[in-house]
Every structure is written in C-alpha cells, then in structure tokens.
Length: 419
Image (cartoon, rainbow, N blue to C red; front, side, top):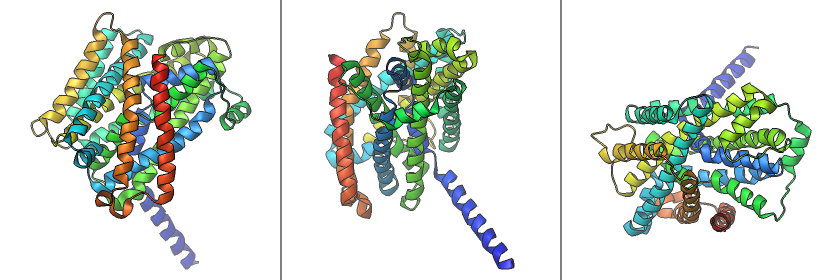
C-alpha cells in the first residue's frame, strides 16, 4: 500500500512539473496564432458564413494542418538559432534582398494596422462611442502597454487577450445550432467553381497564414529566451495555438451561417454582422460578437506594429527587445510608436479610403507570403544554421507540398483581387 501511495505521489509530481514547464514556455505560438483573428480576418469569416452558410467550414481542417507545419518550422529555427527570421534572411541571402523584403513588409503591415484601428472604431461605435474618442484611447493604450512593459508583462497581457476570444464560442452556443448538421458540413468537402466561393475560400486560407506571423513568432521566441532544449514545449505551444485559432474561426463562420445565411441577410463588414445578430440571436450574442471584434482589433493593433519593429530592427542589426528601455533601443520603440501613430491617424482622416487600404494590404500580403515561405524552407534545411534540427525527408516533402499549394493560392488571391 505504501509503495502504491509513493508511486501515485511521484506520478502526480511529475505530471504537475510537466504542466508547469509547459505553461512556463507557452506564449509565442498561442499569441501569434490568435492575433491573426484580427478585424480583417473576422470580417472574412463573417462574410464566409453569411454568404455561403456552412459550405466552407471544412476548409479549416487543412488550414489548421498547414498553419501547424509553417509555424513549427519558425519555432524550431527560433529555439535552435537564437535569431529572428529577418536576421537569418539577411545573413543567408544578403542585405539587398532583405532591404526590399522589409519595405514590402512595412507597407503590408501599415495597411493591416490601419484596418485594426478601423476595427476599434467600428466595434466601439456599436457601443455608442465616437471614433474620435475610441481610436486615440486605443492607440495610447497599446503604445503604453508595450513601451512601458517588458517581455513578461506584455506576454501576460497578450495571453489574457487570447482568453477573450471565447466570446465568439459563447455566442456560437447561444444560437443553439444543430450540431449533427454542422459536424457533417465540417467533415464533408464542398466546393464548386463559383468565382465568389472560390475567392472566399482563397481569402480564408490567405488571411489565416500571413507573412508577418512568421517573423513575429520567431522573434518573440528569441526575445523570450527559449533554447533548443525547450523545443518540444515550443512545438506544443504552436500546435495548441494553431488549433485554438481555427476553433474560434469555426464558431464565427458557424454563427453567421445559422443566423444570417439562413435568414438571407447579406453583410459587408464584421460590424454589420454584430448588429444583424441582435434580432436573430439576441442582444447578448450581438454584444459578445462586438466585444470580440474590439478585443481582436486592440490585440492586433499591438502585435502588428510590434512585429514590424522586431522584424525591421533585426534585419538591420538594431537592438530589438521588449526587455530594453527606449534609450537603449530607440529604433525599435520609435518604429513601434510610428506605426501606431500612422495607423490611428489615418483612420481619423475624413473620407479615408479604407476599402482601398484593405485591398492593397491583402494583395501585398499575397505577393510577400510565397517569398517568405521559400526563404524559410532554405533556412530550415541549412545545416550550418540548424545542425541536427534540419527537416527530415518526409517533413520536406510535406513542407514543400504545403508551400507550393500556398504559393498557388497566394497567386490566385492576388489575381482574383484585381479581376
């Protein structure tokens, strides 16, 4: 009996120790994945559900697999090399290539940041707050959070923001859907050659795997100080994050499908979706949807400028860490501040061409993604950088296959955006 007690005590202690280790190392993967559910992406998912019902739910399964594959490689490069992705690209492919890559990334991220402040304005207008109050207040909050904190405090705040994505899951259960029909739609591929449906499918995939994500994930792993010996925990973090972000996507599409689509209501933005839900799913579901949009917009308005600052400062060899002060890393904090100032300032201009900004930023993302993924595959297979952690033959087959598909979809997204 005493031996049995000792056995269970050791087992419990070992289990708790492993759980504690996991929570000590998580953060970058969960944060990177969840912040991709920003204002633009929530709008895309809302449109998918409102316009095509449950038809596109099945796409989230291959998207989850692709996201895990791409993010796992970034996490592995981060813990093994101790360097950010732009840093490795500069060392491997030269300063000229990196310079042009950074310009394109800067333009894409600025456009995306403008969209996040538009999301803040739209969500707060649902609660009766003018954009001339909500946008400056939101801008100051996200600037203060990063400029006055360090990596640990900022990461904790971001992890708390991840929890609030549960509002979409709660909203989904509130409409009491038929889970048997939804389960069948999720597991049954359904696609036709309707141009609108094809474009929406490409949009879902293209917005779920964005170029900035790969740079931010690797940079945050380096800033957190994770090493090769903690790789398995970083990999678990990435897998967990990739699954949770698509669970949220599932509930957004499903919620709009069983309410808006079934009632023949068409929408243009996530704000329209939130307002339209009130008479169909109740005021509480509508307000939860709006709150989710606000949380996602604030979250992304913090991360996108931070990702840009990390990436560009690493590319040019400047100090880039949340554990430094403003005077120690003026380029890092200066660039972060500039992105927030421009993103919020543009939204406050009268008659700002928001649709055009969103359009061009998505096109730039579509052009940039193939190059980033190809650079990643060359780097992950470089033994001088990765040593024994290079891709296996099977992983290369899977990775190259995934990248080729994503390159094709990025090209399709750019072409469909123009035509």
